[in-house]
Image (cartoon, rainbow, N blue to C red; front, side, top):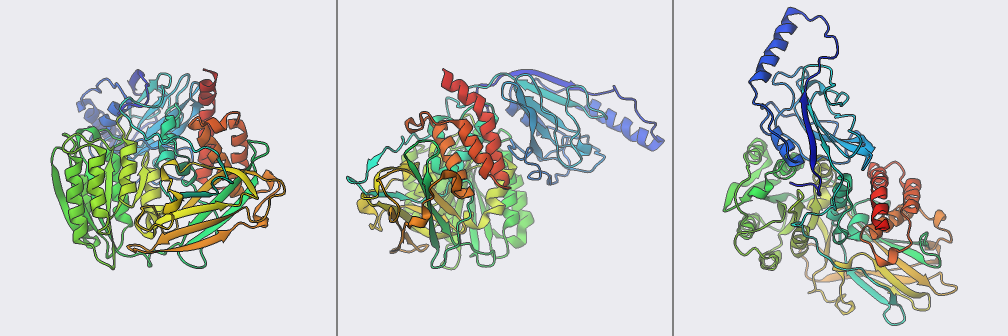
Length: 628
C-alpha cells in the first residue's frame, strides 16, 4: 500500500535508559533478564520503506493471544482512523499487562505541514510501536488498553523499544492505479421547462470514508471520488419514524448561507427501524479477495477483523459461508450456523494473501452458495471484501456486472466492502453493489467496521424497501429553477418513475436517505413549493406502491439560523463536498463559513465532531489548492 506520494524520511529503533530504574525484587529482575534475552534473539528490524512495510512488520512479531482493544471508539481522537490491526502482539513476549494487540490510531498534536498523526499500535503495559507523519512534529499518544504512554523517539520509560517514522510532505491524494467514477455535476433546471426531478435512493457511504482517509493522510480526496449524497448519508438525522408503511418523508427549506437570493430544500426519507428480534434470519456468504494485492495490513488483516466483528454480531438461526478467490477460487467453509462460531472464526483466521485475482470465478461460486440457502423466510446476502482489483478471467467490470445482474432476480443481495489504497477500484466496487441490489462501504478502520457490522447491522443486512425511487415535482409558480446536489449516477428518466422494470435503490432497516436541492424561488413563494413522491417495492416484490408528500408553508424557515440543527449540519456537509469536488456551483463558497455552521450544529454526536476536525485539517490544503 502506498499512501499518497508520501516518502519515508527516517526510521529509529531505540530503548530508553534515561530514567533511573527502581530497585527490583530478584523475581522481577529475572523476568526482566528473560525479556532482554528474548528480545536479543529477535532478528533486527529491516529498513521500512512505507507505512505498509511498517505495518507488515507487525505480522512478524512474536505471536500472543489477541484481545479486543476497548479503546477503539472511546476517544474521538483515537477513533479518527485505524489503518490496520494486527493479530500478533507488539509488546514483549511476556507482557506485564496481559493485553493483546490491536492497531489503533490516535490524533497527533500537530496537523498537516506542522502537525502530525500518531499511529499507536497497542502492546503490553501500554508499550508499543508508533508512527508519526507530517512536517515539523510527531504525535503524542499511542493510546489503548494498558495505557499508551507518551511518544518521543528514544524516550520511552520502561524496557520496550519504540520506533517512529517521519513522513515527508503530502502528495496529491490519488495513486495512478486508483480509479473512481466521474459522473459530473448536476446543473440548474428551469422549472417551467422541466418541473420533475427523479432519482434512485442511495444509502452508500464509501465516498465519505475514502475522503476521510485521504484528508487524514494529508491530501484532499480526488474530485471524482466525491459523491455528495454519500457524504450526506453517512450521518444520521432525527427524522420521525414512519407512521404508515416502511418509509416516511420529512422536508425543510431555508435561505442558503452561501448564495444570496437562493434557498436550500432538504428532502429526508426515514426507513422503519427493526429490532433484532424482528430481523429475519440471515445467510451470509463472505467472498474474500485473498490475492497478492490484499497483503498489506489495511486490507486482508483488517478485513479479517471486520468479519470477526460481523460474526460476533449474528445470532441463532444465522449462517455464514466463506469463499475466497485469488488465482483460483476456494470454498473455505460451507454455510455454518452460529452454534459452530469457533469453527467460523478459525476459517477466517486461516486466510492468507497471494496470487492473481480471479474475481469473476469467485463471484460465481459465492452466488452458488448463497442460492443454496435462499428461502422465503430468511435473507441471503453476498458480502464482497476486496480492493476491487481483478486481473484473471473476464476481468472487465461490464462482464462481471452481467454475472451479478443474472443472479439478482433470484433474490440474493450484495454488500461490497472496500479496503486499502494505492490500487483501490472504487468505481468497480460501487457498481457491483448498485447492480447487485445492495450497498457499498469503504472500511478504513476498526471503528468503521464496528459501525457497519455492529451498530448498523440491521440496516446493513435487511432490505425493507426495494427499487426505491424519489420524484420531486416543483411548482413553476413557486420555484423558478432548481438543481439537485449529488445523485448524478442515480438519475432516472422522469418517464421511468412508474416503470417498475427499471432498477433503483434499496433502503435497509433504519436507514435514512437525504437529498438537498438548491432552489431559486419566485416572489411570494411559500406554500406548495413541491410534492415529493416515493415509489418502492416490498423486498422480492414485483409491483411498487406510491405515496405523495406535499410541501407546506410551515416547512420554510425565513432565516438560515432559525433552521433545525440537522438542516444546518447537512448544509455544511453538502457545502464541503461541493468544494472537495470543485463544483462550478461552489465558486465563492467559503470553507470557514461551513466550519462555523458545522460547529454550531454538531451537537454531541461523535461523527459530527469528527467531521469538524476533518474540515479543520483540510482547510490549509484546500486553501493551498485554491492559490495555485
